[in-house]
Image (cartoon, rainbow, N blue to C red; front, side, top):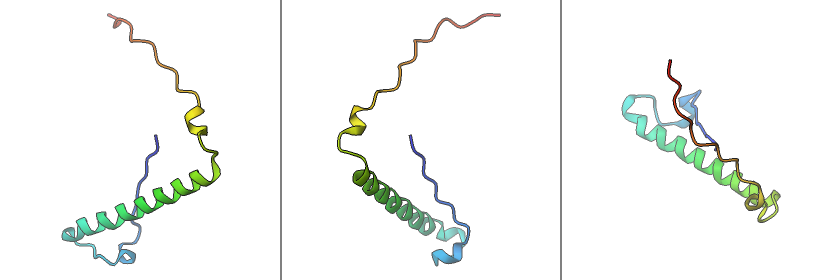
Amino acid sequence: MLRFEAIVHNTKTLKTGRALEKFPDIIARLAGMAGRFCTMLDCVDTGFIPGGLLDELPLPPRSAPPGPAAST
């Protein structure tokens, strides 16, 4: 699992303002940046990893079913 975060260190560079009513605009700009970054990573992945390699990797082990709860 990958997790992506977009953090604003300087809202002036977004040119959206910093007021609370501008929050949806800020989120939309950050979501666009994160989306473009993910697209770029996908393009890099496609260019450098041979086709089908990810499908051939072993699956993670399945964990055993949980046992009975310990009583004290």
